[in-house]
Image 1 (cartoon, rainbow, N blue to C red):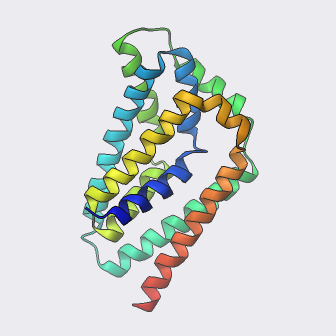
Image 2: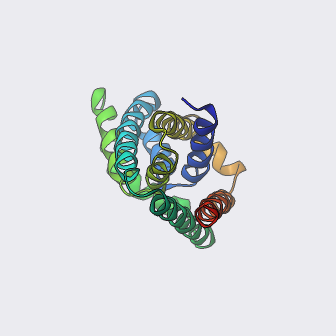
Length: 199
């Protein structure tokens, strides 16, 4: 296990996921259902999605090293562009909240956990955090470290959404978070591609 890679995965996934739709979805679900049940359901969805991303990254790591690093670098750069565009044209968060509120059908008990799981599991497919996890595993070939860092970041973001989501959105602009995430992806992308050219 590599503490540095755990920290890298945590930091990059946390920054990318914080302004993401899954944060808003978790926030809205926590206003409709018991927050603890929402966090458990969301956490289970993130765990399954992270395992799938780590497995995909492991398969990708069997490709030639330069090809893996080039693809990883391009994914980071594409992530930077996507986050920058989202930051510039981010719609009102209230519209997103209404969309997730409609999906939160009245229920109780374990069904709230299942509902949270289903909403987040569907929302995470092809998500930038999933692609970054695949890229990090393929590049560094440390699946356990990347899994721990990525899942910890996703659980931390969903925990923030459940506990202080509304207040957090009052203090921090989603636009700013998008731009910070774009900057991190840009740095990771350039660094990765420079490594390819230098090798």
